Amino acid sequence: MANLKAIRVRLSSVKSTRQITSAMKMVAAAKLRKAQDSIVQLRPYADKLNEIRAGLSAALRDTEIENIYAERKKGTGRVLLVVITSNKGLCGAFNANVIRETRHIMAEKYGEQMRRGDLALMTVGKKAADTFKKLKYNIMADHSDLYTALTFDRVAAVADRLMELYLSREYDTIELIYNQFKNAAVQKLTRETYLPVTMETDAGEKSAPADYIYEPDQVSIISELIPKTLRIQLYKAVLDSFAAEQGARMTAMHQATDNATELIRDLTLQYNKARQAAITNQLLEVVSGAEALNG
Image (cartoon, rainbow, N blue to C red):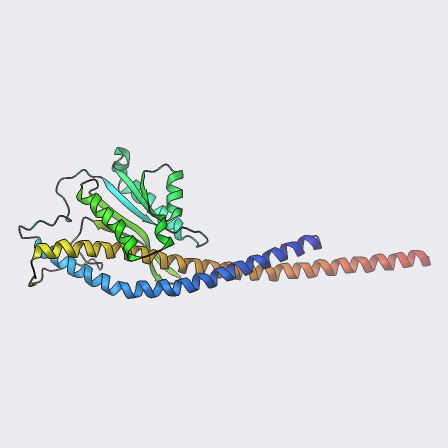
């Protein structure tokens, strides 16, 4: 039978852990509520902008107007992957799934670019940055500080930098890899092309060219609309990931709290059995000593 003191110490330790996980669960729930409101409000606007952008790109396809954000016929073949994770852990497999998917894409889809040294990473989140630094991958920039004050202006500055890298022909393909928020318990691992701009909506359906009347003109509209949709797209991805992180952490802490409660129940039972056994042994010793004296 285990030592009473050892069981008592472990029981106290597990109770303290349960208090921590329960507190973290409540904090994550509060953050999730705010993040969920933000992403739910942004999605319809982002989807509509993406639909208009896709329709405009399709309309320009058969014209002589050049879409500088479209796919290039000739390029360097260089690829940039924007990997969005969290700065903190204790959120289950949230970060591990993104990192695993990134490594899979690098090996399966962009293996040739890796061998040539034409593949780089931009990380948003310390977990991805630390992991890929240890693996000695090419990280061209880290924007983990975005989470200290997650605002549209700060994310838009990163989006502008990505557009600059594409327009300067430093990279021909830029992809986003992140967890999309579905609900508190479900996060969908998502990979989407950021640049070049495609003529497909988020639903994957090709948009038919619409007979729009452009004011002032198509060139002015595309020079304003496409950069705006790209800024919104990146902001939506970061917000999605942040909301998904809080949902994953809340779920993980809920499970940890339940596990701690079950362990406390088992340790309490074990402690009571050990204490009962100790009392029984003491009684036997007293009875045996009394009989020895009487004998």
